Length: 344
Ligand SMILES: *[C@@H]1O[C@H](CO)[C@@H](O)[C@H](O)[C@H]1NC(C)=O
Ligand SMILES: *[C@@H]1O[C@H](CO)[C@@H](O)[C@H](O)[C@H]1NC(C)=O
Ligand SMILES: *[C@@H]1O[C@H](CO)[C@@H](O)[C@H](O)[C@H]1NC(C)=O
Ligand SMILES: *[C@@H]1O[C@H](CO)[C@@H](O)[C@H](O)[C@H]1NC(C)=O
View 1 (cartoon, rainbow, N blue to C red):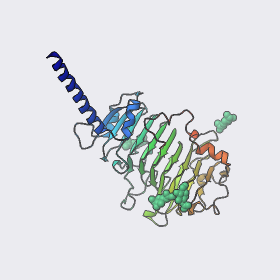
View 2 (tube, rainbow, N blue to C red):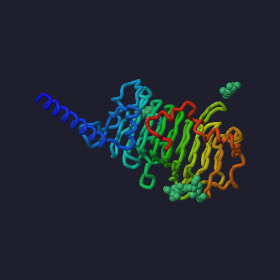
View 3 (spheres, rainbow, N blue to C red):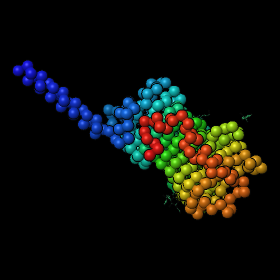
View 4 (cartoon, protein in one colour):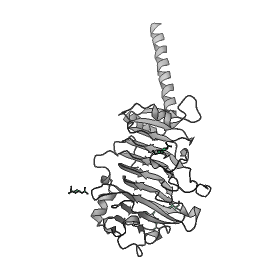
């Protein structure tokens, strides 16, 4: 008799455990499976649910300051009309949406860049996947009649940060790759004027770089990368590796925001949107020897070097390798330690 009750209780416990596990499994996406390995705590955000956080910012605010365990913020598909800020004292956050164009953060502030970006990530050790960030002030460019102003979709100022399958959409100054070591994989960045800019030390791998100046005017001139490396000892630089440079209108590959600007395209497809001269020295005419603008192994009609500026750098294969290998941004293994395999 006693054994029988025990058996029933045991069955109930087993049944309940299975039930809970099934529910949990149901909630898991492929990406979230990794959280078991790393023991990530999960916070859910759903704009249309009352039982969860309805804004991404509220979820970030709930993370304790000086957090040092990975926390997963899992964000349902939807449009989140909010400015989202990860403050410097909240590292180890993994924000995961349901995919580019499915989970979107949209905001339309402009001008003063440091407090208006749709998304600002200021802490170290951040991973973001499957989210689109839009600055709607001048975007989409064909529908928007606002005067053109700097309007940042994302500002990334923390070290050791990775972006996987994210998109950044804007017109002028879309992505402020501000400071720190960053890895962008399978992302899309769209814009016209200096739309990837800042002092970051970054590799963009298998990303789509989409020029949209031509949407506004056929005579528009766009500038893709405006790196702000400012001295010979500054480790900053933007490396585009196996990317696809495409879109509408003509564009320079880059121009020098600061005196030691460094931009490298390697093994990328360059469409005929690329202006044959390739590069612009901007305010540093006469000091071009300090700039490191280089290309290696690119293809497509925009990769023809016959009309490139004479001062484009000719790096040796070994010199290229120093930038195109992940060691440029990662000698301590931080990318491998992320709770998401961004190398995939
Ligand atoms: C941003 O900062 C500038 C300069 O400090 C200030 O004038 C402006 O009001 C701020 N804007 C917002 C949206 O906080
Ligand atoms: C760069 O580093 C070298 C060697 O460490 C040093 O001699 C030089 O003064 C530095 N230059 C600048 C501009 O900081
Ligand atoms: C680059 O992107 C354009 C537009 O999406 C596409 O048509 C083209 O096939 C892509 N090229 C490569 C080499 O991936
Ligand atoms: C350029 O190279 C990429 C792979 O790096 C390839 O997918 C693409 O088809 C090539 N395009 C042209 C026009 O050769």
